[in-house]
Image: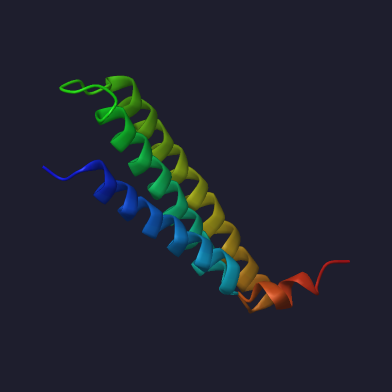
Length: 104
């Protein structure tokens, strides 16, 4: 069985990857992917802590919360990608620095 420290190291790597995407990328699609990576890291972390809370007991409440969170994250990413498509059609770019200069 994999220990808790391995799961926490994995979620830490996902957190760092998501923060790196948000801090360095300028493309709107890559920013959305960075947000999705952060959400998935939080969900995995929540599941890991719920399974290691008591020995031999898995909390079903945590799993239901993660399922709802995954569904909401899918809806948010669908809306965000729709906004990205409309921004590209209207302005012809996905670079957030160029789009920031367009505000009035």
